[in-house]
Image (cartoon, rainbow, N blue to C red; front, top):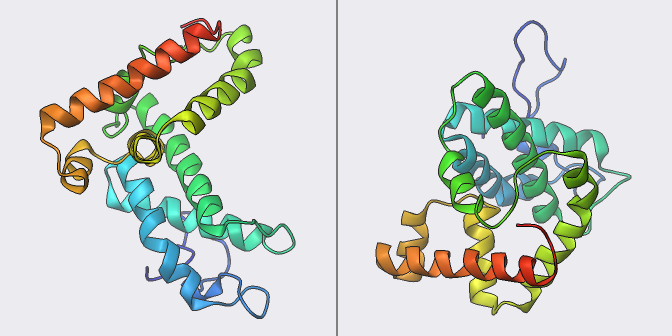
Length: 197
C-alpha cells in the first residue's frame, strides 16, 4: 500500500503517511501491522466490491479510522477489528453503488443467504437483530471448526467459491453441496429456535 491515507476529492485529510503509521511500540508506529493486515483487509474489501480502487479506498478509510481511535480504544485482536471495520466500510460503499446500479460482488452471496435469513427491514426485524445475531453465533459455535471457518470465509470475508474450492480441494459440485448443506442447517437451526425464516 503506497499510503495509509489517500487524498480525497475536493479536500483531504490534511496529511499523508504510510502503513507504518499504525500503532506499535511508541503508541502508534509499527510498520509490521500495516504489512501484516493490509493484504487481509484488501482481500475482504475486494471480495465485496470487485473493484481494486474501491477496495484500496476502503482499506485506507479503515486505517484512518484506526488512526483516530487507537489508542486509547485499543482492540484486543487487531486483525479481527480491522477486518470488521474494512468489511463495514466496503458494505456501505457497496450499498451506495448498488443504489446507483454499479454493483457486482455481493449479489451472489446475498441470493445464497436469502432463503435462511430474512431480509425485510421492518421495525420487528430491527428489534430482533440482536436475537438473530445470538442464534447465528450459537449455531457457528456448534459447528465443527472446518465448517465454521468455511462458512465465515464465504459469508463474512466474502471469498469466492473458486478460491474456497482450491483451498479445500473440492470440486465445484461438492463445494456447492457443502455450502447448501451449511445454509440449510442454519435455516433449520433458526426455525427450531422460533426465529421467523
